[in-house]
Amino acid sequence: MNPFPTGFDLVTEVVEIADLGFAIVRPRSAEDLIDEAEYANDERLPYWADLWPSGRVLATYLAEREIAGLRILEVGAGLSLPSIVALARGAQPLATDWYPQSLAFARANANAAGLGQLPTMEVDWSAPPPALFAAGPFDLVIGADVAYERRHASQLAALLTRVAPPPADVIIADPRRPDANALVEALCALGWSHSREERRVQGRTDEQGPVVYLHHFRASQ
Image (cartoon, rainbow, N blue to C red):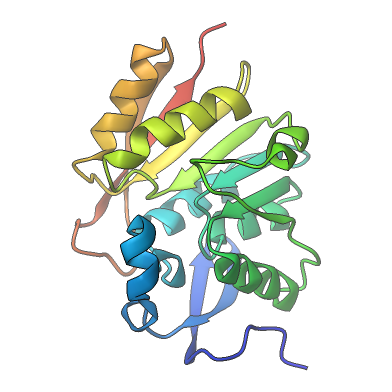
């Protein structure tokens, strides 16, 4: 039985992350999935359907570190490549997104990779469910290319203050989008520490170029 959601034109993309390899099944074109009614309601666009370079960079970062046993929350997970890598490395990830279709693909891809069940949860940052907070505490909160619109900065900052109290770390992979600064400013204004490192994209790049920033945050004690 095909474990992937039906009704999509699918393509398989082979992804190598450190010493790991995955055949990720996804919709062929995110643009073909645009729903005008959804966009009119809350400017929602199906960015989840692509494997973005920042997600690959974040997944590589996780693959290179000792994360076995860590409780990891991924926000805006999309196809959840970082969470799948975390699962492969022995961590306990929870992949969250506001598109249930993206989480269905994430679960199916994890299963197809022989990793078993990937825990997922549908989460809208503007109205996060109580179950999200009950699932914590988390050791690490991650997100890839989640700060692409300025309006999301306050929502995400408010969410992070609740799911990532000290000593949890937060790592946001950002392909240098102009509006990512709004998230940095929002968290720094709340007293969070911030540092940044640069990573080069291995493989396909997008319009933002070959460099991705990894923003490291931690709330003040």
